[in-house]
Image (tube, rainbow, N blue to C red):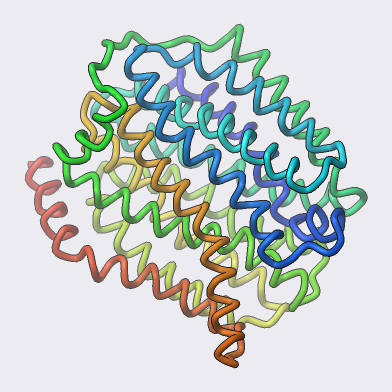
Length: 394
């Protein structure tokens, strides 16, 4: 595990500038570019996820073909840093969205391959703790980024671009010197074989489907819920950052223990229970008054920790030797969920208003039901996979 800790630290650091914008979404859209529509504000998040969607597919496949990770990670970090720094300039809004797209693609390339490098270096019996560490680093970065972003943005929202871009540039410099690839065999997989991998190992559909729904609701949280906190509950950026941090900090701290638990308890069971409880949390959040938001968000973070590590563990186990391709598929479906989350949020809010239904808390109920329905629809698959995992332990 000693070789994985520096990579995990890098994952933590590159998550900070990505999530620092979450509590500042209103200030960086309507505040910086007055007159933006509700769709425009949500597109600021979706443009980033559109770039991630493309990169999640390509990065893992290309890396498996090359049997090398570093040669892709370091340039991706450089592009990532440049895109973040460029957003400090008040370009026209369409240019900002283009930079968000580039940022998302570069960030996801680095993230997918960094997490795969952790999986590369772990022994088979330690995949659970390795993926728990990777997930914890990612989620702790998300948690810290929202809090830091809220504090920085209380003075000037655009400062997050200068500080975040400089931080990623520093990570790129260190990675160019310190990062080392594990010994890998060149994969025969081609781009079209990503779908074939899923067809050969159909059980991968289960963690892919769950991460899609999980990221769909995450896209809802970082866009609609952030705007809801700012406009309906009238919370300041620092308060929004605190609320997001209250959710993400326990999520981050408990993800690694969740990975360890996957080595003793069925990850299928943990993933299903976590998803059901998370759906209940989303519904409850829509009925929570402003003075209790932090406490409820913290409870949601505890529940969410049961979801990420098990889905990562399942992906790595089920993908076999094509780990980077499998991880790329995991992040591909996750990025698709992130992309659609803000867009589906807008569509839901618009439809509710057209039907003369109060959009809040109804939209929270809708997204909470997505989690519950995912478990119910995949229940037969979950039972078979749970039985299979039990046989493999014996």
